[in-house]
Length: 175
Image (cartoon, rainbow, N blue to C red; front, side, top):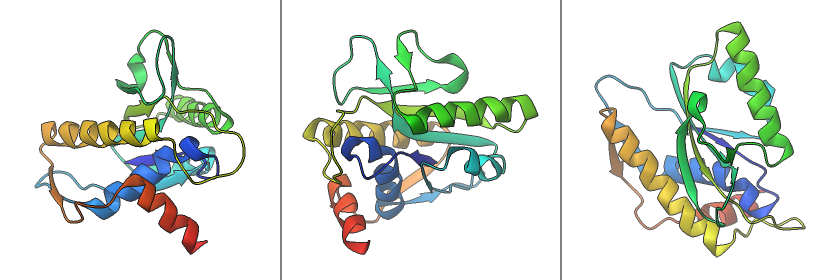
């Protein structure tokens, strides 16, 4: 799992904060799969050698879509993006698309799924996410856990009370 986003711009950091939440909240058990959770931030092309190590990748990120509301969640295969959904609303997302396209050319891209959310664009620097995005992040989390179960991965909750905003706030205090 790979969380993408710029945490300094509110909802834009949801992918990173969600990856950190998942890492704290769950332990994964599977006889056939190894689960790793990576905070990719805005590294894009620098993630190429990391992503190439894996056979399967689920990316958490922001998306934009026609007729969608803030907090709406989409789950799709990278190779079969739904009509009306665009995974290129900010600088890091364009770079991530370019990174995956480059990996395709080299034959290095693993099977890739996207769990994306419509963010509220917030001006200024803040770690505070909007309520709509926090609620949508819960659906992103549930989507991931359901998908992993379909793949034969059991998710054991070890920290049931942690929230995505708490993860964001804790990160801010560490800096």
